[in-house]
Length: 112
Image (cartoon, rainbow, N blue to C red):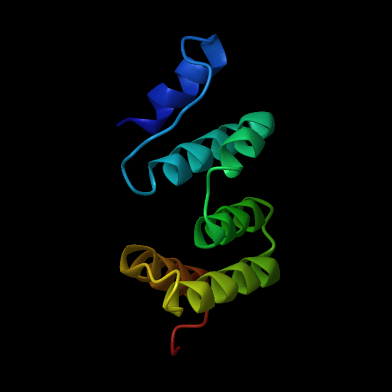
């Protein structure tokens, strides 16, 4: 699955919606659409995301807006949700930790 291709197909109208049975594909497509500035498409895709994925998407929005404080808050919420029993998701938890490390490094917080 190439998220750039899915976004292009949605823009052209080749497909009217994107749904996937593969875990987190909708998140990846939503992030691609966000990066390309297709906010209406992001809103439509967002309704398919779970709580953790929504926080990751909100993190990406904050990151694109250079709002490091909000980005940290979104990652903190996402990590808390991912650790919970009902929404446990080790793949997203690992991704959140990676994003957290990259964010801290970009802010000069190398010790943590």
